[in-house]
Amino acid sequence: MDESAATERVAATRVRKLAPRRPMEGAQLLGQRAQFAQFYYRHAAGLIRFVMRLGATAHEAADAVHTAFTEAFPRWSEISAPHAWLRTVSTRSYLRQTARRERPVALTPDLPGGASPVEALALKEEEQRVYTALATLPPRQRQIMAWHLDGFAHAEIASSLGITPEAVRQNYARARAALKRSLGLISQEGR
Image (cartoon, rainbow, N blue to C red; front, side, top):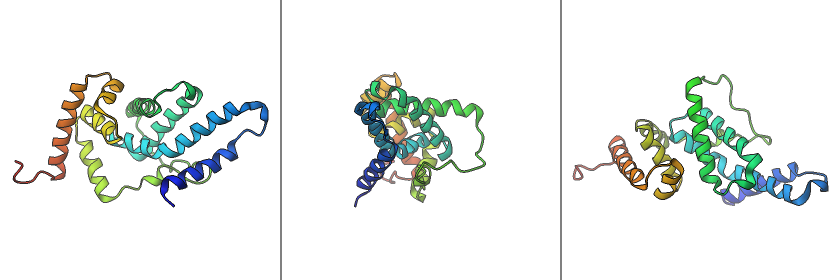
C-alpha cells in the first residue's frame, strides 16, 4: 500500500471519529470538515517543509503551519487556492515569530491519534545539506525557491508574493546558481 492511500485511510478514520453525531448539523458542515481534515492530513507535513525552507526550525515551522490552518478553518469554503493561501499565511506567521524566538523546552504536542507532523520530518543527511544551503540564500531568493520546490509556477509565485514574474525568474536563477555552488554541483568544465 502506498503512502498516499495509507494517509487517506488514516484521515478518513479520523474524520469518522470527529463527525457530528447529530443529523441537525447537516451534511454540508460534515463535508466541509471532512474536506478540511483530509487536506490537513495530506498537506501539513509538506507545508512544514516549505516553512523550513524559509529558514525555520521544525518546531517553528510546525507552529506557523498550525496557526495558518487555524486561521483557514473558519473560512475554508471561501478559500479558492488553499495551497497558496496556506503558504502565504504560514510565511507571515513564521516571520512574526522571528521577533520573539524561543527554543522549545518540550516536544510539539502530538495530534490526536499519536501522529505528529514534526516526527514525520526526520531529515536525511542530504536533505539537511540542502536546508543548510537554502539558509545561506538572501530572504527573497530563499522564499522563491521554497515556493518553486513546492511546485508553483513563476506566475503563481509572482501573484502570491506581489512581485513581477521577471523578478521571480531572476531570483530563481540566482538562487539556483548559489545553491549549485554551495552544494558543489558545478563541474570544473562549467566554470
